[in-house]
Length: 211
Image 1 (spheres, rainbow, N blue to C red):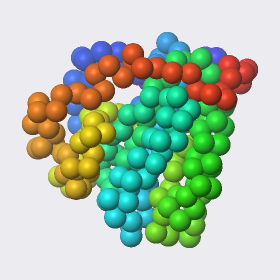
Image 2 (cartoon, rainbow, N blue to C red; image 1 turned 90 degrees about the vertical axis):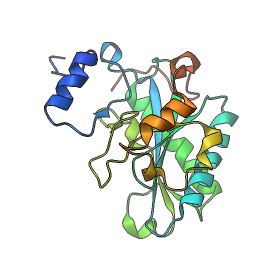
Image 3 (cartoon, one colour; image 1 turned 45 degrees about the vertical axis):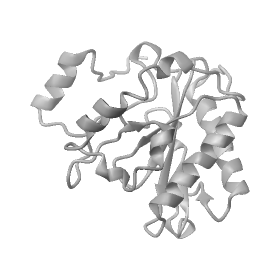
Image 4 (cartoon, rainbow, N blue to C red; image 1 turned 90 degrees about the horizontal axis):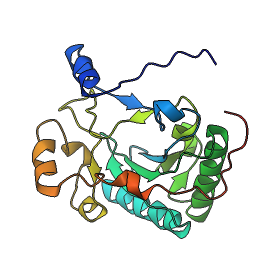
């Protein structure tokens, strides 16, 4: 109600961001015409410094398996750092509060099943040698790096969508960067080209009143 929302409408808007020197683009998990009902969920895998890249890849596969048990379509992208983003496209039916709660329950069940691998606590002392499943990206007003957005870090790594089959060949997710990403996309195509066609209903999330 009377809330001002800044959004980019089209390619000209993206070009304007570039002209203003914007490097990172972070977005809500919804569209501006359905701002109260997210159309995707993100499980942001944030590894502790001591966790190897291979362990993060295995963790993403474990989360994929859990989500597929719920009959959900599962996509993946790099975060632009050591982590990965596991993403599910949704039909925009349930509201933020319900989606956030439900994704927290999913993350909690995964962490309970793999306590040596995952945590859902932000506390640094709880995350030692583990991977934090950040489901809070699914709360209203939270953001995640947009697909193909660069990150303002050394070598300008990108948050790049990848095919699950390609994941094993990516030794360092941050190697997909400003210089290497164009050729990667030319050779592999856009693995998220039809992501919206796979939109699903999140089990357990309702269209309850509330944010």
